[in-house]
Length: 159
Image 1: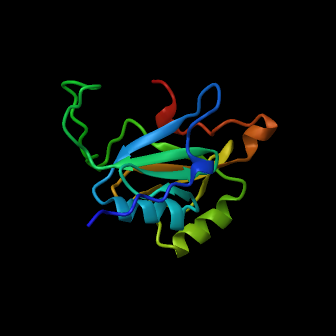
Image 2: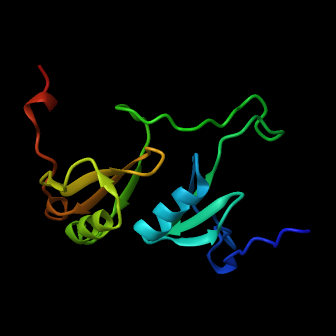
């Protein structure tokens, strides 16, 4: 028995006719769980279900697949699962028009926020984690639109 060909949303593939587009590839432990989070919770459009999973999120794409061994085009490089913890060196940044509405909608859909939105003067922001523990910043520009920058906390000042 042959498997059916995967359904592909050709209109939303990250395949520019000219120039380039930016996508983000993340390793995930369970593709279906991550696909659900990025499509159902955050409102993305599933472009390809698996191998790799591609979800269009606003004006960009998240590409998801499990980790794997080196390949001919990346010899000596193994793609490993992200190990969530209290440190990070990269995170997804989502800019929204109404952070309070997003916070309520996504929380109601099961998103786990680190904190509720906090006013940082230049912006209101908060963070959530996806099912694999990737950190996602959600922010709404506020004060920066009027030349206000983030408040300096005592621990941010020199000396």
